[in-house]
Length: 94
Image 1 (tube, rainbow, N blue to C red):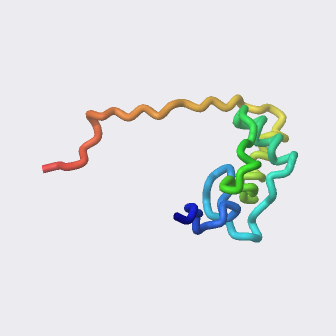
Image 2: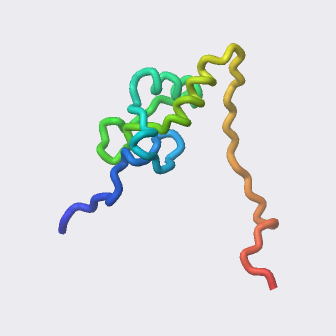
């Protein structure tokens, strides 16, 4: 049995936002981008030794991280777990 392989090149997608990115809007994940990412998310970019991981980011994400990194007063990033109230979800009404 042949090994499974993704039909899409992982470098077609931004490592940061996950959206499809055209070639002209791709930026390689170099040291400065990795540093911006680590400073913002408080986690390092990983899996760069894997062929299935994107090795690019879109210009929009890189520019946003760069602006945040260069800001005079940086707001701490706090990620919260999304809470879904099951009583408010109705798949079928009738």
